[in-house]
Length: 478
Ligand code: GLN
Image (cartoon, rainbow, N blue to C red; front, side, top):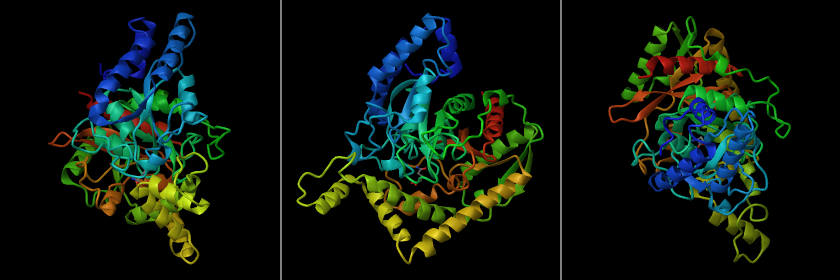
């Protein structure tokens, strides 16, 4: 049975009214996931034992009259770059095909402590590098909305499980758009919180100065509830912020009258016309709700993709050095010497995209090129961040498209990495600036492909972002 009709609130109400037990719901979720997975390949590993024991614990708490937690009984998918103790975590890589972590990520601990039920680990691009989920060593994910199309990436599996109703929520990771772009392609809500808002302890590092963990959900309210649970300072991650976590759900009052929204002109150049029309329609809706719309300038947007691919590859080349055949990974067995073993393990283990990025990253960090590329990119990053800081002095939120086009066909862009990279042009700027941003569904193209509206707000102003997104969602609910 699809879980598409369930929300966190409806599950809680059903559990408390004894309409169903958490165990029954978990069994439904697992059975539906098993039945659907051959179509989409969205899960890499299902976790029946873990799910049922978490569900039984929720049922026991309810039976004892205790609070079962904010996510009680809610089936959740977790992107396979986030480690889970005793549960295989592959990062979409051949190198980690059999890796079973000895600890849980902080976000995982927090959602299980809140009564969440982890159904399984979701497919993704290898080490979160990609925009289509075609870089997974375990095969691509198919978009549940149109099975011949990509779900977006790199958190394609996490978006797909929520869209197909095999989970109610999921966790993804976003370094350059990997939550918002798949959310947009699959027609669900996806949130990239402020950098540092959610602990990355247990998130396999790709580009540490850009990596975020964030929620997927079918509704804005559920995405806010999930962020509420996972956000906040964590001793285990020194980059996690001390800033208090406000009550995100309390902000969802539908009142956005007088809010100022900025439309960056740079985001409307090169947009497919259908996407552009849907975005402008959404902006008109927000105007009807009393928002004031202004033009804002983000003049360095055109440099963002180039800047990102210098910084992200530099950091990746360093982070991926740990996968060497000594520590976590499978080891090439036929190597004679130590250096042969390194070479063979990494040569056989990494897919083409990871190798491309390790080479690029090593190059831009090397003596003589460091200043020309890496340092220059850091300067550009500061300019991109300043563009947003200036725009967000004039307006409460910046709004625009998530991606220039909707979900493309599987195989369509695989041979053109640069075209693939350009699909992240509107999402990457948010990561470079470290500000919160999200994708909220804003309709479908004539072919029935979902499109997402992107909303950016000031650092730690997630509540404002949720308020706008939920007001829009509420006004357009059919
Ligand atoms: N598509 C971008 C990349 O390949 C973003 C990935 C991400 O956000 N993890 O780097």
